[in-house]
Length: 399
Length: 169
Image (cartoon, rainbow over all chains, first blue to last red; front, top):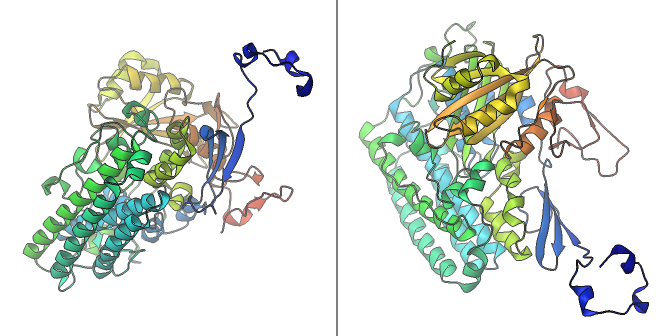
């Protein structure tokens, strides 16, 4: 059908079957899912082009939570940035401040205390479990299963209580500091943790029961939001999303930082890179994290109480006596396996008391960028589980 | 010049000798500086021609070295899944105003990262498919991560009704 023939008024036109064989003029509906939409937990705006129920195109707009993190850091001294970094992700801020501290320690070249390394791993895994539970809970909400959400969030309560007892705060922990961690194991932590882990295991089994035997869940997760292994790599997608697509890349195994080399744990890997595999990978990772936590506490009890941070003298050598950490000139990049993927910090120091450049490599940004290829051609109903499993944190994405 | 045992650097020095401007290592992390005009072909060679190949663009960011010439540089962090190795590639930008070829055709992940570098540092990426700001509104004036842009100096356009409050929220 040519454009000219279409210009005739519709009422006067004589339709023939062959008219329908050509390209018909399709007007796509535009749907805007704004940051205040209940499905978009993070501050992100989506412009979805719809053909019926099918997503033809998707434009992702970010920046709503931009607060000049990297600019602000250039005006802080090295220690102050630790707390800023911890606010990059409200669910697992410990991991962001850890990545930053590792990059600073790389530049200083200071030794570390074994006890603090185990405590850091313990705090990292507590944060990861909390983050994964938030993600699984969100999927339940997006798919209309409040009972799945309730199980996940109830388990998270146990984890956040545990986090409070170790780090002093439920959410914004400020636990990690340059050269170590703030506190050692609190009294009675082992009993507390055993009770918490048993409760979490129980709740996660219940969650698995209500979700993986639920037809709605399976229909909405299987084969949706697919991103193949090759596409994940092209879009620099890491973490559970990449592992669900079949690549076993995990910074904790590939480049064991801290004491991850001495810990026994498995890295679950999926096959198809769809939402179902992502869901399974997160469930299993969470269980592996509980295993790591148990090993950490066992080792920490054997190590006994003692210093949890390297001596100040090692970090402030050459200082003018003001006690500030002095970082020699140079550059470094350090990354941790955060709950979302590789979270790294690239630092440039000119030897002064303030950083020259601080760059955070935010996994959420790259994962949100990959959301369009995941959802193009999918149905609108696939949006909720896909976005929830990507688990983007806008404070980390926008910085 | 030393390749510090990095197959990626070795490959660049063998196949594009004129483009390698320098190498250095700090805490075991190897950096290679390449000529800005060859950045896309260097990245493509590292992705396809190096053994092991550097197939993951971990990060791309800009740096402002105010007071030095060249002032701006763009830093690429690459990772090789097969070889479990990292490599940092640096391109010094001589052009003023600063511009560089876009690497989106080699690494699609660079799309938003280059938009961010334009947004916050004002570095133009030639042939970028969507050269718009990423984090700030289109009516924001200036590029706030430049060293000579003070936080107090941020200004927000007033014409657009959709203008977001820039800076503090």
